[in-house]
Image (cartoon, rainbow, N blue to C red; front, side, top):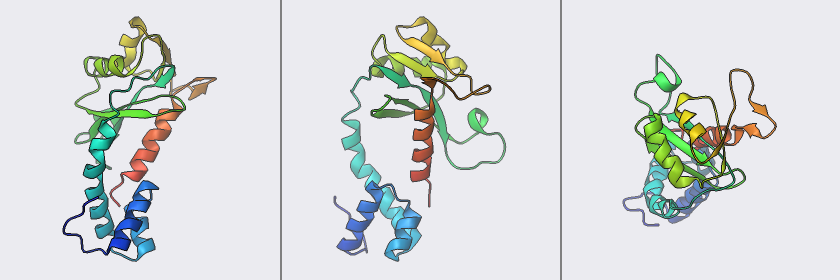
Length: 180
């Protein structure tokens, strides 16, 4: 990894890289190393563009078997509405294979016309797809997938019918990507 204009010594850079891989927050890594939190955060921001091209190389993989679909909103706390009505947040669509890898993509909106092409490109036909009751997933009922829904208003799981894997993924992603 090439870091230009970095005032940290090489040993601190390597330690910060280790903490980044271990998903330690920038603030915690700064406390451990005895450096300023803003310095650690800036270093983390420099690492992300370096690893991004390597992550995108695997974007052509197709998932089969049991997968979960969900969308999440990133961007910190905003006054006003939460969730789908929150202004100024970034919408991210996620598809994890149960017990395997996950695919995420920043999308402009959560309409079916936006999500269905991603789903058909990333999920093999005849796969079992688990979602919540959001209306954009209605198109899955008439597609080549075996679609199961879980109503979060009533319960969160019924046997194998749940989307707890993607909900856990969002929780971890938001914890790691938190500003400090």
